[in-house]
Image 1 (tube, rainbow, N blue to C red):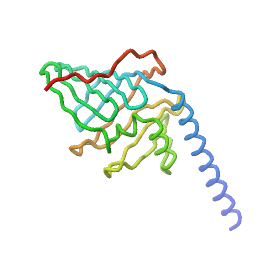
Image 2: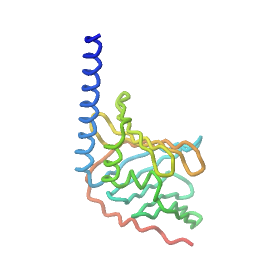
Image 3: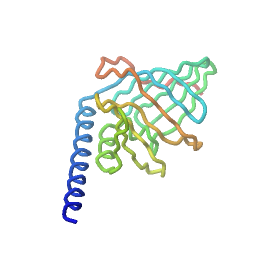
Length: 185
């Protein structure tokens, strides 16, 4: 019986220490990151879209989709807009209580990751599962080797699964983007 208790406490200590070290390494990398540029693939339900993005912490993002309608997605502070340049259409919304409020604010993201107990390593992915105020879950994925943000999974406003994957990450570039949301009415 003592042997099994010793093994149990060893595994518990090792898991807790390993979990803490993983989180500390992600935190160190994230705190040293001012911005990232990357190629993305986004699957919402059955629709797959691709493009390029820039994130500047805190709370600035611009994604340009490979699309016939000139689709772009902007976030600046707490405002977001989906733009379709071909039709000069803009859809506005606030990011409060959405995954972007957490993902684009590295201090809030780190706070949430330190609070969560559900961090798992699957292959080359470190996955932190975070509960959002709106009741949805957010899985934030980091690369096990580089500790860079690798993507996220969540549920859209219309209850479809969203899988956002990041590739070819470049960190701390000189960014000249103003993140001004085009003014289509």
